[in-house]
Image (cartoon, rainbow, N blue to C red; front, side, top):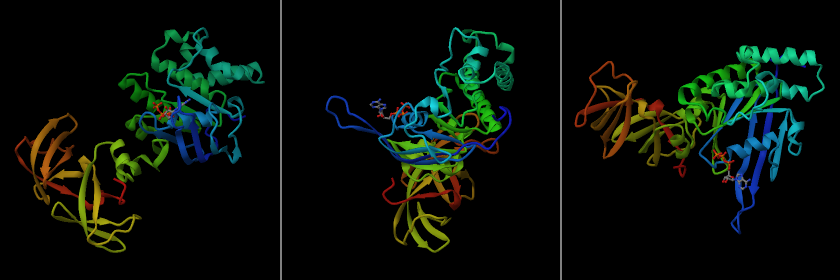
Amino acid sequence: MRAIVETVPSSKVTFAGIVKQFPGHSGEEPVYAVNKVSLDIEPGQLVTLLGPSGCGKTTTLRMLAGFETPTAGEISINGQTITHLPPNKRDVGMVFQSYALFPHMTVYDNVAYGLSIKPIPKSQVKERVDKVLALMHLDKMKDRLPSLLSGGQQQRVALARAVVTEPKVLLFDEPLSNLDAKLREYMRDELRKIQQRLGITSLYVTHDQAEAMAISDKVVIMNKGEIQQIGSPRKIYMRPCNQFVANFMGKANFLKAIVEQSDSRHIGLNLLGQRLVIPKDPIFEVKAGERVDCVIRPEFWSIDPEGKFQGTVERAIYLGPYVEYEVALGGQTVVVVDYMHHLHEPKSAGDLIRLGLSGQSITLLPPGQE
Ligand code: ATP
């Protein structure tokens, strides 16, 4: 068995065409909680399912844990199908929002529990529990009961208990939701460090976009049971594939533009009367004369006296690290975020403002994907 604090090659998880249908209540239509979900989690990766309440992320996680059985499709770990195995035969560890610690057991006994029900000699159990407790900085409180620990410490015990059995896959179901904002940030970094150090393939569920960005190798955006987009946090933020993803990952301006010209490498756009050239990337075909929808993040605008776009500030909100402006531009209101406000006088409502925009930062949405 591998040593707990070493990084070892870990497991690959595959969801192939997973559907989960629940019967509808009192004559209602059945609910497709999860619909045609296909997803690979590469060895050692942390993949996050992100989406609004009811989008199917918990059901997806529970199918990997074995608490739910898919209506269709296959789930496999390292190529071996586990779709119909009971939870205790799957070799997965789980960390819940509620911690789910045994209140009458000490920290040590909570962590040792998963090993004590396996055929492992007592001396080895102690060695492994001690190693994990040290890794989680819990060694000094191993004789305490969970009720005497803070929320963050309890969650570390829950994580210790999940990793001590050296599972093939770790599952996290909104593990930080019960912590206050500051501790949540600290714990998410701790959790990510430990996951990377152990190299355990992990599936993480959250509805918090910042949390997903901070800890994930790959983010899966779900809506109404279906995957909308899969990619690195940066890819999903910079190049959302539709309006739902763009909105879910932060603020976004959606502006119409007209394609003036398109060749194999570039697209010339007319945006609010100004010409911008954007790289074609591997995107869908567009033709001259077509109207397209552009996604522009508020901070992609720059306040620049030489900028091509001129508008009028309607509202200025000072938020410390940045100033947020609502600017009337070409008959609509756009949101502009200025992180460089320490370099120039802030603007006020009624001020004229010139804005620059790089073509590279514009994402076009495929037609019909609004
Ligand atoms: P949340 O963040 O609120 O937990 P979620 O994205 O995790 O939401 P799920 O809990 O997976 O979403 O639920 C997806 C859909 O399936 C919802 O419409 C939910 O009402 C429905 N659902 C989940 N479990 C059951 C069940 N046991 N019976 C019937 N419907 C269910």
